[in-house]
Image 1 (tube, helix red, strand yellow):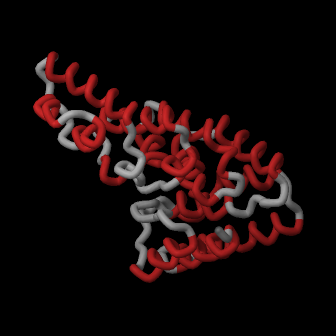
Image 2 (tube, helix red, strand yellow):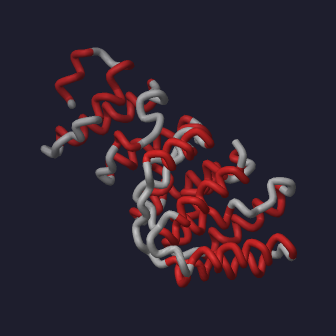
Length: 236
């Protein structure tokens, strides 16, 4: 993965937006200032200020841009993002990959003080940030969050969880998605990472729902099928 190439690809997408005339001069100016005098104060200030210059309009992407971005980082998608979310992920990619402690400290500080939209951007950036193993705890906490957009950022169309979460955290993500009526088909790895423990949890959940007279999510059987007897299909 080449963070610089991804950063440039994201900037190109920003340039393609119809209302980017105000955003691009600000972004490039701040990037130049930060490159010459990197420091947390300017990094935090720009990260917080970006929506004032970008707006929050949902972006438009061409098939070519989507294909190119996928080639740089398989599974990474910006579809459905707002322009401020995209710009914040672009800004996060200015963190130097040469200093793990500084990157981790900066991102952890952001998470502690972030409001919802800032958290969405941070969790959206995890698959393209350096040191992917450093963000496993944060990703697990995002899954546990009761804030829908934050959950969506880590669960849906994001390859990070599938690649980095251990089995227990992954199983929690899948079941949390069912509890909250997420679109399971948008979870990358939802078929590839099926496992016996998850099948047992899904089966118990189906039993509880049936006993309570409540409907069972239609796609729940898919998570259990490879590991349980066909006779249990009626639970689902």
